[in-house]
Length: 204
Image 1 (cartoon, rainbow, N blue to C red):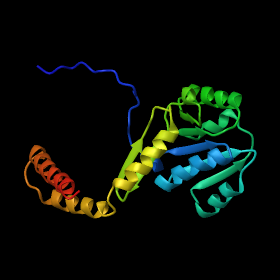
Image 2: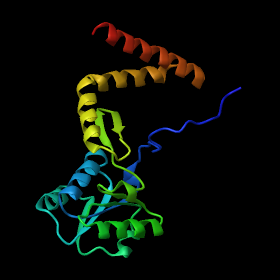
Image 3: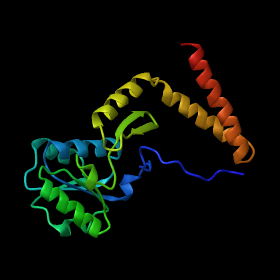
Image 4: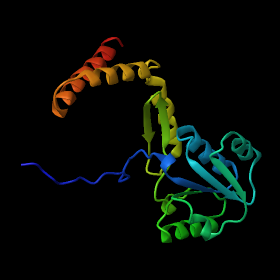
C-alpha cells in the first residue's frame, strides 16, 4: 500500500516556470534594484509586457526602454489603481512603508506580488537562473540567502557542458522516433539519459 504521508521540508515553495509573456507585469521603482529585476525579466522572457512606474528613473532603465518596445515607463508616484491593469507585481522601492502598502494593496486585489529584499511581503521570489541553451535551472534558498543562490548558480553553470544544447536536440529527435505508449517512451528515454550520465562519469 502506498504511503501518502507528505514530509515537511525546509522549503515549502512550489517551483514552476511561467510563460510570463502571457501576463502583464508591473514593476514599481526606478533605481538599481528595479534595474536588476527588469534585466532578469528581459533576459528570460523578453516578450513580456512590462510597465515600470516611478518618480525617479535611472538612465540605465531609460536606455533599456529604447531597445525593448514591450517596456513602458511611466514617471509618476505609485497609486493603488496602478495595479488594476497588471497580473504580477514587482515592488523595488527603497522605503519599507511604501513596500508594505504596495504588498497590502496587491493582495487586496488578488495580484501576485514580489517585494525586493522583503521575503515576508512576497507571494513569490525571483530565483537565481542557470541557462545553457534550452536547459534552465532555477535556484531558491527560500529567501534566506541570495548570495548562496548566486554562488550555486556560478558553480552549476561552470560544470554544465557547452555542448548540452546539441545533446538536448538529439534526444528530442530520438524521442520523436520512439514507438509505443508513454510508459515505453519514458523507459527508453530513461535508459538513454542514464547511459549518457554514466559515460560522462567514466571519462572524468
